[in-house]
Amino acid sequence: VNLTCPEGYAFSDYNTSLTLQCQADSNWTSVDAYNIICRMITWEKPAAPNGSLDENVSPPYWEGTRLNYTCPTNSLSKSGENATSALFNGTGWIFDDPLFACFNVCGPPPTAESFVKNITNGAAGVEGDEIMFECLGGFETSVTNITTSCSATKWTPDVIPKCLMCPTDPPIAPATVSITDWNGIASYGANVTYTCHGKFKDGTSVVIVTCEEGNWTMDEIPVCI
Image 1 (cartoon, rainbow, N blue to C red):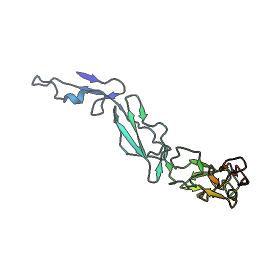
Image 2: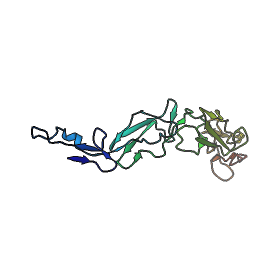
Image 3: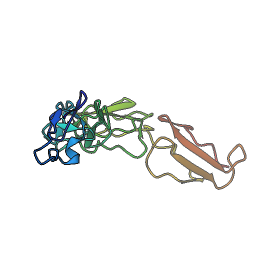
Image 4: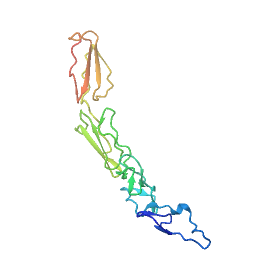
């Protein structure tokens, strides 16, 4: 009796056909039942994701086989992962992450003052990533935006210039006015409170000056009466 697997299937010994014979003792050729199950098989494995290393598992590959791929030392995927896998489902290979690839890691990006806005989210710190910092009042380099890029294994630039949110200190307080809330940093959104020991001309006793987009909201404090 000849047993033949359909196309794309094979027995556990990789053959696609098997012959059973009736022996002289009136018994059929002894075969383990597991060995006469046709299973999907392929001899081709998928191309490894860019920059990754595979397990070097030799063919053939049965349905349900999973091959693992990892990034070399000091490299990660764009999502910050260092490994993925592919499953042979009988008709083809399915990757857990079809876009997986390995890139050199630059490490932590350069930092800026806490009041500098980081307007790039989700960067894993791998080659090709960019992070933009924004200083509405202008950096020392006279620009409001600076982009640092991960190239090879380092960030360029690797130092973020000082952010000069307001180019001057807040207005000077008259002798009869006290200042509170001023921490010495002219950062965007910084508030300085001026308290008159009597009344300002408008009848109030408190004036708040704010650093907005590189300028203080008031150049001179009103006369305190």
